[in-house]
Image (cartoon, rainbow, N blue to C red; front, side, top):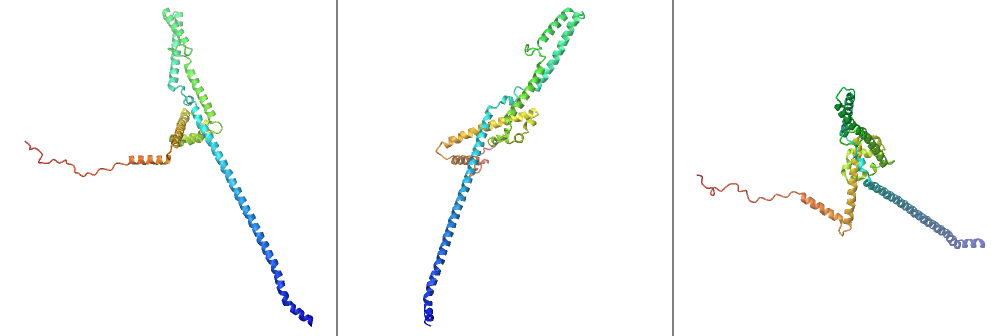
Length: 307
């Protein structure tokens, strides 16, 4: 019985010790969980920072590549613009190309040369056969000899030459062949006209339909196949001339901008002031208020009496 009482008396004293020992592991587990959560959050934050840094680096590299590509294209375009100053515009314009009038005149002169030479030879042979007088045959023989000397082009410029007509025809063919070959070298494999077409910003004439057509054919590599007539080659030459004017305008604009930037004032403010001044000049002047009425009617007291 004593043992039973003692055991019953000891139970209340042991209860607090058991509850305190149970709370300690719970606090430790909570601290461990909080520590693990903090570690996870710090890892997640570092991961987010790493991803953000990688994204920024990737975007920076993309921007650098785009800027480098832009600078490369601009340098390539400027080199193409500079080539405009070294073009052979005499060949592009076919300056020495024989005209139709020259071809017709040479052909007519050759026909007359044959007729004159044939007539002189006929008279000379007729005199040898005693069909005409000897002096006519002598004169005809001299004329035939002189005409034969004009067979060489340039020997006697006062007489028509026999080979002037074929010389002009060959010159036409040669110039056409040289022009097509020169344009082929200009265009190359990548095309030339469509790469300098941004110069239309400095010369609105390049925006016409025929020049757009030439630029499109240059881009599609069909330009040489479509240069069939003299009008097409003339359009190509005119495009080059207008592009050269646009390039010169670009250089002039850059010089003006550099001059303005070297000054101490703001170029934008200067441009705005110039525009305002132009607008003020364009405004019509306000009509003045006519305070006094026109005195067209004469005062009858001042009119002298009629006779």
